[in-house]
Image (tube, rainbow, N blue to C red; front, side, top):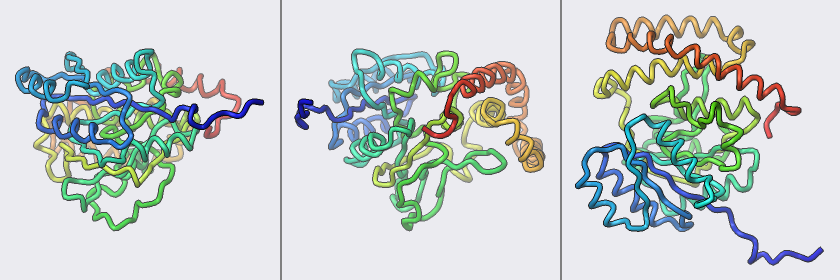
Length: 326
């Protein structure tokens, strides 16, 4: 056997895709941080559903190496799927794709840290880093957890960063604000041609994908040395600053991801907790936020499609000779 020359072995590559909607100041900061990465991405692309053409033109002029694509506003999932198709296509051919919200500012070694972590763990389809609030003292997300009531939450959110999440580890989920995906896993993760479920529009599409990855035997890795700042639009105590239509998406998507991903045994085991949680959700909606009550109708209208996708997912899992983690 002829020994390989280490210099000829290509290092893992990644590209960056940014999903943008009318946050031009954030986008400028985000692109500046991407340009300053110690491990330069192979390509950078922005899917833009904004309406301020003049602001966007100015940003494009300052970032000539970035590709911009105008698209109708069909939600986070649709834009993310466009970026993933581009990332895994022949023109880019990257090993990983880092999806970003424009209100995320990466530290210079974020890409390098996360690429290295995922390259060393071929069982991980998704990865994320430590996200901090703008004060850089408060945690935004150290990965995502899945409690018994199945309302996913960001680990450490709103806590002071004391190093309690400074250990790299496998977690349930990765925040869509800064999620790195293994391009070789995308075809396996897709349902009905969609990696991110476009019925979700926005919110919980990241936890739905993370849950599906686990069902299919993949894992999600959290790398605390990959750090970034996330301004976050929906903060604790500011719920009613978010438009009712957006809040309804978050509310109904809880049911869609539960239908698609929870096992029958898991559902029966947690039924008392789920029922108690549902009483609390209904009471909160009826008393404090009646504008989201139409989300029940929305969820009911999409439940049939969610059950159809569940059947596809369960059939795919059943065909696996080894159903454990890869």
